[in-house]
Length: 433
View 1 (tube, rainbow, N blue to C red):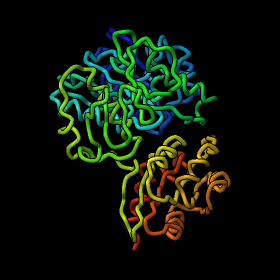
View 2 (view 1 turned 135 degrees about the vertical axis):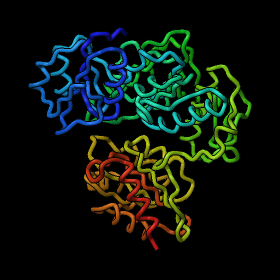
View 3 (view 1 turned 180 degrees about the vertical axis):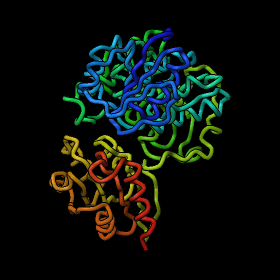
């Protein structure tokens, strides 16, 4: 894309917006940035900055290209206003991808994206192929394409929000981990959310590869498909949660070669190895997994106290993540769940809770309605704070049990994000005596 003498408007002044502005300047464009914030900083002096952005301002702004940061609702009134006089609208990822000339592995799914993205990057780098994890995790892609030299491979975590604004984006390998209802506060229906994520395959052809979880509902695919499963060994890749097998041969032993545990992580590992094999170079898996610690807040063992394990799974911001965490437990569970109301239907967790849990504690904005659902399976206590939830769970957990903090929804009713929520859980648990 030739941007010489073009006027680029960037909506959103966060890290992605700053990276997109720097890239647009490098390509010879004039750049203007708008944000609803009271002040904007961190941009080159030649960038025109406009805080206090509104829809009234947006409808008056002309641009050759409008670049939308991923945190801004594509279907919201602000983007609609700034799109009125824009020749073309793209997201930061689509914009930056046009300047990347290496090999793209894109990863999507409701859960497991970050772990899979990290593992893919580790495998490539351990195998002497330069790779940067980026996109919805790590660096914005616009930062990566300005590196010199650019990495040979990008492990690109992509969210449904980023996929909403693609046009030409075509990954060599597209990884589909799973799908479950989420972001129902943004999407009008589950189907609209599903279709947004399906766009990862939209521009792939027979020269590309789609790595997919067996049993997923997907559109017709043009790419070559590779399957993985923890439920049927008919898939190309199979795991029962301990060994990773391909075509009947053991490729990796999770217990011996990694610090990752559980069926959900087995799926992440299979998808990652399958994606890396598509590049066609020998892989050093033992070196890749040596010393690797999974990202925090994902079934993270905080401590064992009085014979009870405390697991921090604050990253479980939707029902599928909660179900995955429950399914992977082998000890009796006292579940702590709750947070923001996202319009999710928790009825489907009842049967699994009956199998895995001995009691539950709910807190946050959805404490009462969630408690009513969970009480169909186990004795459930409704509390007001996370601290009270931990104290209550401790009183309910016998020796040999696991207190599983897997909220099943987002944290914005009480915290800035799942990281702050998970850190609060970890700190409180570490201070227990």
